[in-house]
Length: 501
Image (cartoon, rainbow, N blue to C red; front, side, top):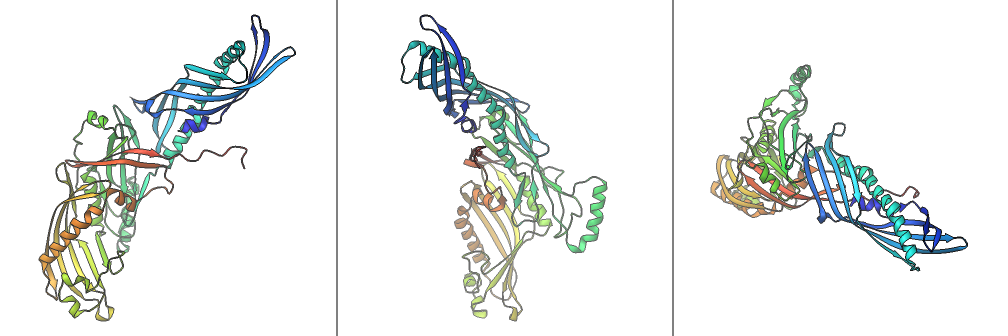
């Protein structure tokens, strides 16, 4: 695509040659206004081979180029003028390049090693003239000079324009994923390995600040960390991922994963994340056999370390009130099914539902059940009325376990188990009704969620991203989640012509 854009409309330098042909004698032939009107390269006839150590070999065949030109011959006082067209066919492109991480950009970049092209067949049409000697002379000139000029143009584009535009796309990829509503940022460092497939490994970092009351201790800890050359950002996870083509990654957490607790300040201390990764239950042959262009493998320890860090930071808590969720009304009348006496004692009043984790939620992945999430939380109902002192009328604790098959376009909900216990209440609370209601909500609204929605909600990517995932599909293995997809690249508009301004 980049190559076709580059060569479309390219003008080949004029060529002139004096010919001496028996019977006809000597004459001069000029070919001018030689323009590449069309250049085609079939993706189905292209093959990419991974050579190892970051090197790749692209061999493309069935390349074709259509050119138009003007011709003019002179012999003493005689001359002739006309136009014609040329089709170069049976072309091949032989391109070897290296993919490496640019240390300055911290992003993958492409560097050309060799670039060659060749055309095997020439189909020439000369308009307004039928002399065989002219046809042969023009054909000779094309074979000697013009075809070589086109091949040089292809090689030059493969050496410069094409890798420059590919690198511009690679350079637009974010190395940092900004996650909404969470007290940390995550960045990825690229390392690229090749064998029968490409493996891109990375690690993420998390920064969770401390509260104002801990500021002095935090500053002292930060100074001590600086003396020991410890990073201010704490490694949350290492990543390992692979696929049958160019591959991106997000991976497993390791024993060196760390985080810290707090609210608003620098990191105070490092604490080891208690979750370990396990080996991916797929070998290189299975990874290479995946027809998808990109495969991402995430270990359950990654999610568990993330939840563990948020829990230690006190961030797994939320307050819902009337209007917090669009279309959801939280009033005493709406909650009458769960607390029957509520609208009688507090008629037509707004409510606040406070939910907080009592322990770190846990995620487990298996080939059979998919993803299973277990949580232990507390829920309290507060009447939102300052004149009454915003009384808490009900407080419950609950254990919740949900299994689901997470898919790019929908969640398939499996088993749901929930058990509520009333901790404190001014009113009669049917705990079993809470169990049934939460189960119904998850079973009916869970399938409306999808990984695509989660990604679009949480991850900020460049506004005009030129890379998108298509034909995405997911799978769960013991301890691992896999996402495979093809990559669609939308071409940026071609650079403006130098004379256009």
